[in-house]
Structure formats: structure tokens, C-alpha cells
Image 1: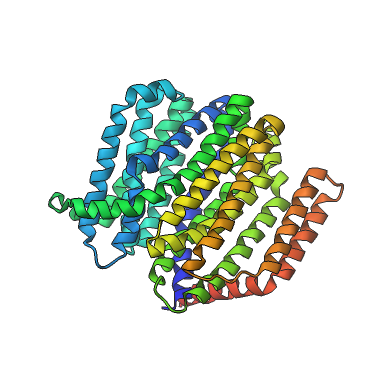
Image 2: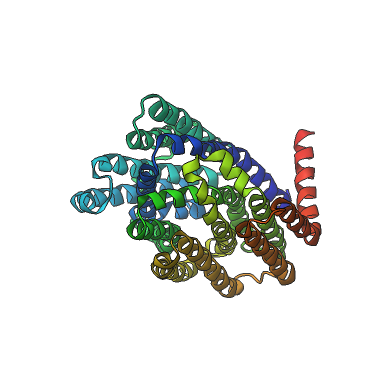
Length: 468
């Protein structure tokens, strides 16, 4: 199987799992906006964001090492699994020791035990999921995402719509969905058969940690950006504003779904092609097609943004559309920086991820502190976009030592210019706004026709071959 075909093939498998699961999660937005007030939604969003922020710290991002080391045939898979679990349990034990401190610092103190339980289950699920993915069990990996989302849907309907448990129901739904998904992965992947306590190895643990610890800032970067955005918005404007911002972030999550589908496959391809003599050409070709795909998706979302918000959210949340455009661009540049970040993963040179992520996170916090008091929620959206642009530029420069990616600068610049024009049209509220937006979208398709044609030809051939 060619490297291109394998990349597209894996992307399609991940797409089946991710699109099904993420679509269910996305469709839960109307349920949340109906049964939770803006203040309640802002509060639970703050707690789940805190969970995501602490996940790489408590686990020392060891699940990233699981993927990379299991894919390396020079290492014992069982040893990697049991040592990663040991690190997770050690980190969680330390977290239990700081329970009194977290009880003072964190919101929703009465739900702190649910917070601990959610964090532990997510840590184990993430590690097991990376383990089966590295073993090539991509279909099982994709299926676990669908199982998770289905149980999340059922539990939310049960706890929110039927029992009206509010915040408690929201948190219980997350815990149950993650627990069921974990059991599904363990049974389907026969993970319990690979857990051998006798293979705990301090030397291997150190080697894995030397790889994973520099990746913590990269994982934290996304958490810190979300964390700082939400806490600074809550501090200066209030929890209701944070609820609007949380809803605005649901639209860029569509792009993040597309990016996560591709990235799961791309990460594996980047590792496999790390030593290839043709890797520069391969990386360049893939990026040029990937970048226009992300920008095209952004353009389509901008065309239909107000309609989407009108359908999906209640009247109290409709104004959140104003904060979506720059968050969409933030998601685009985040995907670009993530694409280049795979180079660090493939070559095991994770210190580069550390440097660029730290700079991006610091810039984001400073920009939030400066801009949010000045222009409100818009400040958080612009700060997010600026941070990811900076990270992308830094990684372009830094990763040249691993692979020389040739960017189509003219087409990329013109495409971004058209996206900014679409954003301007949205805020102007022109009489023939939809017609202008469609015209800009068609122009974007026209200038990138060759890349779009190549992408869909490759996908069509693979789908046809699968059916035959």
C-alpha cells in the first residue's frame, strides 16, 4: 500500500468513528442550551476545561509516549503499557494528596469527587486508546469514539431532560460514557492480557518520560488557552459571557473534528515515513492539500454561520455567532501547527514542541489580559488566533532541520485574504450578504481547483477499491 493511500485509508476509518461520535456531541448543544442556563453551562465548561488542563500534568503526557514507543518494533509493547499505567497511578496518587488545595481553588467544590473520577477514567481511556491505535487496531479505536458518544447522548437525555439534574447530570454523563468506552477498548483490544506487572522497568520509564515530558507544554497549550480565555472572561465579564464564548467554540469544533480525523492518521504516517528519503516531498504534498481543505471548510462554515447558529442554539445564545470567525481561524492555524508538530513526534525531538508551545501559551495569556478588558469576548478570540499563528510560524522555521516543506505561499496567502473578506462581510450585515459570501467561496474553490481535484480523486479511488 502506498504512503498516500494508507494515509487516506486510515483517515477514512477515523472519519467513520469521529464523524459519528463528534456529530452526536455537536447535536447535544441544543440540549445543553435548553436545559442549562448560560451561567450553568459556563460553570461546567470551566470544570471540564480544568480537567483537560490537568490531564497531561497528572499523567506527564505519557499516553503520547505510548503511541510512539509501541509503533517502534525495538520495544516490548507489554512493558510500555504497564509502565505507562504505573506513571498514571502515581500521578493520580499525588493529585489525591492535594485534594484540600483543589477544594479551595476549583469551582463547583461540591462536585470535586466527580472531577477526580472523570480525570482518572480519561487518563486510562486515553492511554488504552493510544495503545490499540499504535498496534494498528484503528477500527476498534474509531468504534470506541462512537460508543462513547452514544452513551453520552443517552445519559444526557436521561439525566438532563428526564431527571433535570443540571450540572450533576452533565458530569455523570461524561463519567459513564468514558467508563463504558474504556471497558469496550479493554475487551475489544484484549488489553487485560497485555498487563504484566513483572515488566515494570525504571530504565524504560525514564526513557518514555524523557520523550513525553517535553510534550506537556504542547498539551497544556490548548488547555491553557481555553483555561485562560474562560477564567479571564469570567473574571472581567462574568459567567454568562463565558457561556456565550463556550457556545461560540462549538462551531470551530467542527474544524477540530476534521483536523483530529486527519491528524490521527497523519501522526502514524509521519512516524512511519520519518526515515524516508522522499519525506520532504511527501510532507509538502500532503500539507498543500490539507491546508486548502481546512480553509475551504472554514469558508463554507462562514457562508452558513448565522443559519447554523439560528438552528442550533436558543435565542439567548444567538449573539455568540459574532465570536466564531476568529476562533475558526484559530482552529485553522492550530491544525497547521499540529501538522508540523508531527515532525517532532516522528523524530523523537520533542524539545521543539516544548519551546514553541511555551511561547504560544505565554503570548495567549498576555493577549487575553490586554484585549479582554478592552474589547470583551472578541479579545479572547483574537488572542487565540494570534497565538496559533505565532506557533505555526515558529514551527515552520524550527522544523526545517527535520524536513523541508515547500509551501504554496501565493495560493495560501490569497486564500487567507478571501477568508478575511468573508469575515468582514459577516460583520457588515450587507443586504445581499449570502450572495457575496457564495461568490467569495466560489473564487476560493477556483484558485485552489487543482489541489481539490487531487484530493477528491484519491479519496474516490480508495472508496471504489474498498467496495470492489
